[in-house]
Length: 98
Image (cartoon, rainbow, N blue to C red):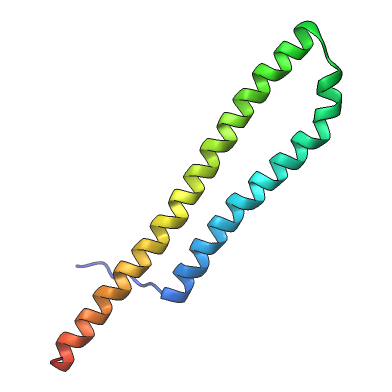
């Protein structure tokens, strides 16, 4: 028994944009959090400052990686939708003899 895959191009396009929008929103929220923490963090000295900046670097790296992953997923969804739309068009043309 074969499995059926159902998809809607509009839904895939919307999903791709939702994922990309989520990536932008996460980045904006993290930037806002950094801006709120910056004045306090700048007042720290010694081990407290060193520890904060080490953890901030890890946080920044993880946030950057998350953003890249979300954007890659969004792009792959969009590209997959475009490929399937092309395949559907080719199949439709083959049935019409065009």
